[in-house]
Structure formats: structure tokens, C-alpha cells
Image (cartoon, rainbow, N blue to C red; front, side):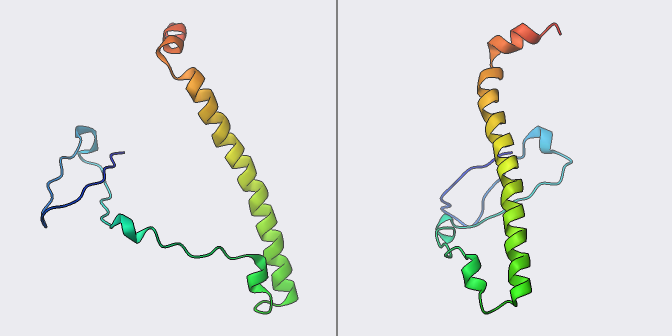
Length: 100
């Protein structure tokens, strides 16, 4: 992935595509960084009281609790991978494992 932030001085921008991207589908997106600053307040289950029936509210609550449990498992996986990568992805480890 190639990502960069620029401040354009004209309407035209020239892109140099890395060799390994030639022949592949790539996505190019333009947006102003200040467009990202605007954040909406997070919704809570309480925001849906009165909008949903009792049954719908309980279903949403159960779904949310299950999704949070699943996210905790995924988050732990990625955090562990990051910590292990710091120890394992280095020249010393590469040398130690090169003959296996």
C-alpha cells in the first residue's frame, strides 16, 4: 500500500504507479483531511428506547453484547500478533530460521 498526504498547488497531479501494482486494480481516493474531523456522537442502546419494541430492543442488546465478545477475541489476536512481530520480525530471527 502506498499512502501519502499532499497539499496540491494546482488542479493536476501526476501519479507514479509502483511496478508491482501494474496490471492490478488500484483505488485512488481524494478527500480533504479536514472533512474527517467532524465526528458524530456515539449512539448508545438508550438512544433506541421508545423507537423499538421491547422485543426489538432486547434483540439489539443481545446482538451488541455478542458482537463485543467477538471483537474482544479479534482485538486480542491482533494485539498479540503486533507484540510477537516486534520480537520475531528482525534480521537476527531471519538468520536463525533461514535454514529451516
